[in-house]
Length: 169
Image (cartoon, rainbow, N blue to C red; front, top):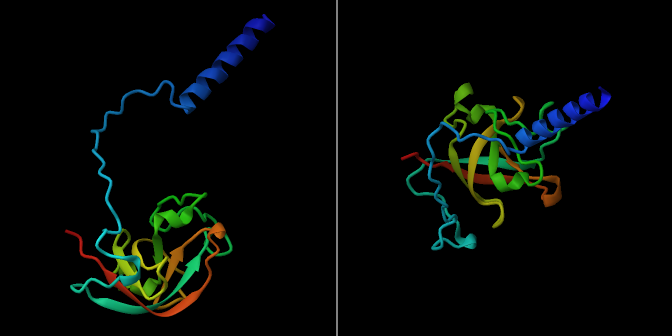
């Protein structure tokens, strides 16, 4: 009797692991979406000559970086304010940004979650396109925070950084 119970327990563990590793995954009822890889940045724009789009309204803000850890965020450092999940191994690859609350639409600004911002005035490595996924503490005004990982070894605070909201087509 003991052998049968042991065998049943081992079988249930095996089935649970197989389901977890998607061995028994059924075809999803959701329609398949064709993904196209975008070439970004465009080849005709060099890293050293990044410029703001000429059609957008620009803002001058300060910029800093932040790491996804409880001392710099809240108790859920790998979840942004809009619910996006941060890659723990390489947070910088997302190119996500946090904006101060005075810039966000929820508190009377012009920038919303998911908006694309063109950032210049920091460095060749950090200038470029970012997506708004987070907001900063209410004591901070006219500032952006770039998401990077601890291993990236990037620190700094920059003034007179230009940001422009890219219009959605």
